[in-house]
Length: 392
Ligand SMILES: Cc1ncc(COP(=O)(O)O)c(C=O)c1O
Image (cartoon, rainbow, N blue to C red; front, top):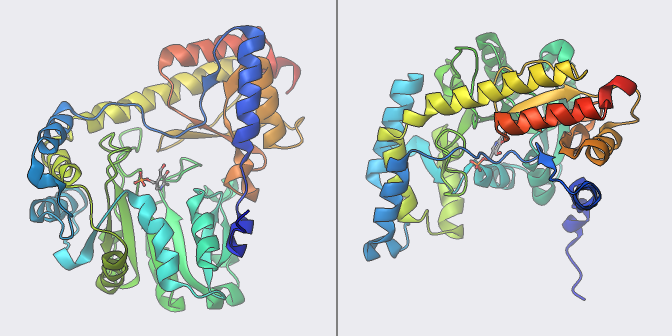
């Protein structure tokens, strides 16, 4: 037996293993499928032009070399995207390409944190926000996101000692898992807070294009002073349906980007060129699906909230993302107990909120990854089993 390193003691198999066993039991006992709202993987196809350009580039033997330098056409397309979409000017030295934004979420704590340094992380959080600090040996300091504060970070609750310890703050709006967005005043306060306390801001903008009800997502970098204090992550995964064809960007503060590129130059050989070519096409011509994708998620959100409410489960409308953050009835001990009961009785799978942090104990996350027909079937099962009638 090989003894894993001490840092591996922080990692455990998740509640998803238990849920998988319950899923199998349900399918055998009821001879019907479960309806899975747990995984946030986008299931809306990319624009055909993106897939065609990828297929073409894959046929070219020249594209199988190491891609140490990014494609100039991709860097230019990113500059144009940030200019036209967010009114942000980026120099090429302010852009690093990523194999998905997850990559930088793992590496940034390694780059900036020593073992006693803290990272301010929202609670509830996207899981890698706490897993990456564990790998880096840094300390996680939670900033609770509560319904009462519209799921925004409350800077007044961050103590003097926490401000002193923190090297970095991670924020994410539109927010996974709560579906909240942030007003302009929040970003202004964030930049003031970062300047005053000398803290690096990492803004995760993965859901920038999935904002509902006619509103538009913004870039953190479009606020005055942002580039002095931070960087932004953006992703092709949700916007262009390219989650498996890994591509993302880290943009903003040049010294951070330089450090990042330096680390990467020691670690990897760049992004498969066909994916970079597909990225250019996505930015230049692949935006045709953005509006229909957003509309599809908004329709699912509306159908699910309306249908589940008619079955007795009142869920607030999310403002953005592909998620609903749903409160659980008081009768359950916690969100794991609720999730197991829901799966056992109805075959509906959601994610327990506490897998996103302590603030999630009385919530579950519902990913809008099922079409309207599956949502109708879920509503039918909730009604048929009277799941919420008896257990309010
Ligand atoms: C908030 C958030 N950030 C980052 C990511 C990672 O995205 P990518 O595919 O760009 O690595 C996800 C993926 O679900 C996410 O939900």
